[in-house]
Image 1 (tube, rainbow, N blue to C red):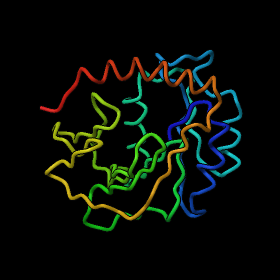
Image 2 (cartoon, helix red, strand yellow):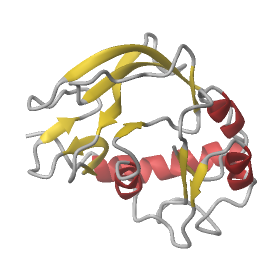
Image 3 (tube, helix red, strand yellow):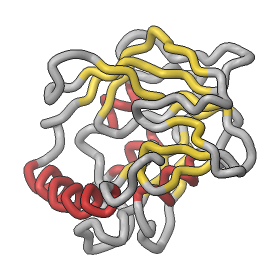
Image 4 (spheres, rainbow, N blue to C red):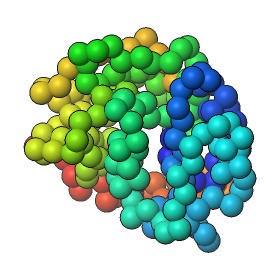
Length: 195
């Protein structure tokens, strides 16, 4: 879970996870994100530790969301990516042997119907996010998945798990900062398109 100043959402997000799941919380601002300190100072770290998460805290801001998300792929052989403003609502998404990418259902107040998104990865050496914060590539530069596309070299599976996005739970200031950063991030990422 990548976080920055998420004390308001984090108890709900972490509270929905099973006790036997090892949780990694990667803290820190992105360089272009509005921040005074490059790490959370609102109690996020303390909340994550109280829930038993392994906290990864850094003294410098992350270059961007792509770099921070790539770091998450180095923490385990199988990684489930959950954002701090999301809740898992119907069971942990187990990825059966033989599959590389598991897709879960995302429900959000800004979209009329749930949509599938890849969130569970049986990580191979060299996998990394690139260009956009939902695009994962392998060491050869071939697509593993984007937020809407399954890379043809890998086995994908739609899982029955549902993740609720809790838009609106953040403070007004945090939401305003996120929107401002999103404008810049989206401009940068929209330069890239799939070949």
